Image (cartoon, rainbow, N blue to C red):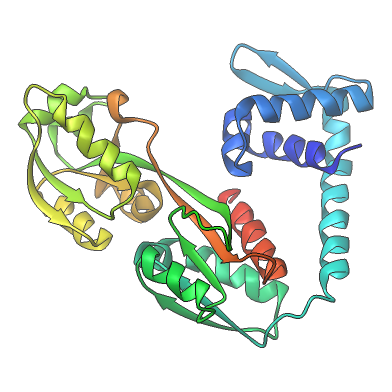
Length: 293
């Protein structure tokens, strides 16, 4: 029985969706489906009933869930014990971008500290390009950055943060769950520019419109962008993670724009090939746990 298949099963149950489980595991939806089908063959039983897009555990699936969760806990604990012979530095140097520091790191570092209570973590912020150089020069141990490619660098996706349109309370769009890209042409815009390809794609999608939005403010700080929206200076595309509190307090309202959907900010863990594999894996697991909250 494959442990990855059991993990996929537990994630599907937790999220109630194959697609959401795939996102959390950084897999495609067909890959998750294939893992569940393989597990069902191993167990010789059906684990889910599928009615349209809705899924429910079968009676046997419900019985297997507790065992599956225990198997995962035992596996993760044993894996940590076996890997504990790898030398963990007394001080772990971590570099990340400002947005990662503000919105992702607070979710992850407490979990890292629980796994390695004796480790001291030194956190610094910089741009992705600067962090890559510092990792290559071994001036820092791990980097949390946008995706980078380099022959001496090991990179793995840690976090995927959907980008959505946000408007302020009382804005006409707030009454609609969905607006078209064409409707954006009459709106003043705040544009958060972080240099990643996802933001470039959004910007380019404006160019195809008959009446592109009027971009009044280009900013490189998410907090500034959010406050400008809340002060009714315009509307803005923002990553979901940074808006949670404001959405809960109804200060920002997400609006779906179908033509500009599917974009997300991707955060990767980078390190020198073959180095800091234990703590890198711990960061990855902590990211998965945080996403499951």
